[in-house]
Length: 365
Image (cartoon, rainbow, N blue to C red; front, side, top):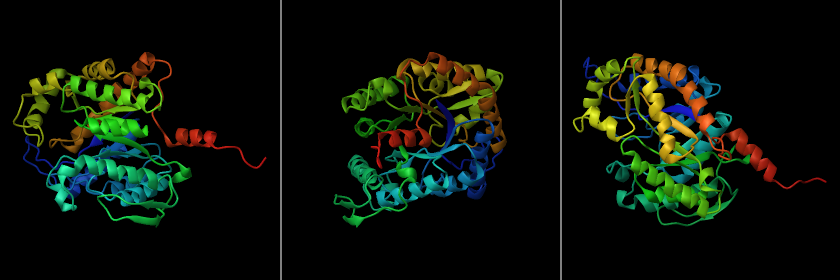
């Protein structure tokens, strides 16, 4: 099982000091956080993609390419690649290039995006969100698997004898997660292709996440990719920790109350009781995270959101120390002990390369 963090890259005023970082400061902070994630023994760093204030990660492959050169082991991913407003041809090129640069230590998570004004900025209409996601991924999937592509669709110009360069590393396309907060169509899409499904899991109650993951597992089996238990599932989560739970609640409350997404709404207590947000001690985070398995089954990737709502870099790095030293080692052990036989490991390039090689017919004899 893989453990890591993801960043939405918001630029938010620290409500306790009044300091607002510059865009440059926030970008450099995210790079520092990612490198710290490897230092403390995490497996994955993922960045979102946003094109509107107060967010800065408009070019994920630029950030991840830099991190590929600065890290040795960390899997570099996106927390959202906008399959609706990006050209699938450019996605194919950019992420195959990243795959080569990172020696396979990468994957990506596709999402529709839920910010209405962004769509027309890139020549699209949010009302076409689902059809765009379906058509664009159908093309992207072919571009990574066919050397020459002829294609015609509704939302972009046709392709004639097109070859995407570079080709995927070792002939193995990057692993794709389809991320969703609320759209069953995306769970269906992930199942159809036998790709991974990542449930955002940070805003909604567990019953909603359970329904989405169950749908994906059932449809994964329906399309012949394996049993429901063999489907590849990832979950998000939000945590804030101090060794004493009362200190965690007291320190995090002003950040929660003023957060750009959920601030000025439900109370911290209401939100933590109704969603997976966990504010407390490392042991409370361990117990809450282990409980996710009770309603989604054995899964392959757990990502935590730590750096948001104006939290200063020093605090985020302290959170990473707690996560890497006290939380994740216990989670690794406990999840492994509870795991049912036959559940697949989290996907890696090396493992998928081995499977692809084994599937090739023998030649030269």
